[in-house]
Amino acid sequence: MKKIRLYKAQKDNCWQIALCNLMNLPPRKVPHFVKKYNTDFVEETRKWLNKKGKTITYVPLSSFLDTGTKYNHNLFPQGKCIACVNTNGKDTGHAVLMMNGQLHEKDNKKYDSIDGYFIVHNL
Image (cartoon, rainbow, N blue to C red; front, side, top):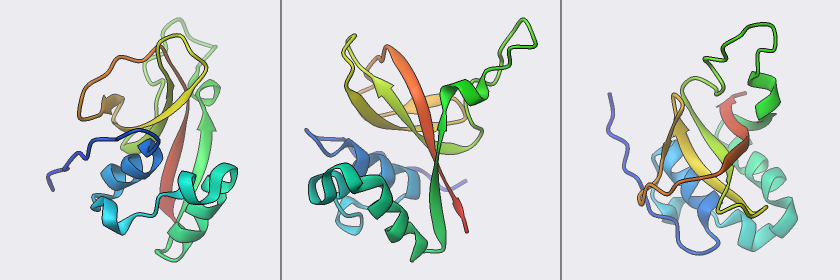
């Protein structure tokens, strides 16, 4: 298995770094979509990924909840994705690489909740 290099997010570049970590690319190869496009960052990310034969889809956490059983074992997508998490009880979003249910970030912060997942997949 190819080793994943984790890049550390700095202030306001967590989306860029999560994409770097997900795609195993250095930050110089991934645009800073949030800074450049503000609220249109997801759509611009999708356009950039389309040029690479990929796209991105958001899936809310509720899509992974199995209300028909007592135990919810798979509350996350399998493989790699970008998790949207909230920190310190604040309603602020943060993007983090997730692999098979484990958050992977350079400083191993603790998060209050996960809102959903952005899954990058082939067209």
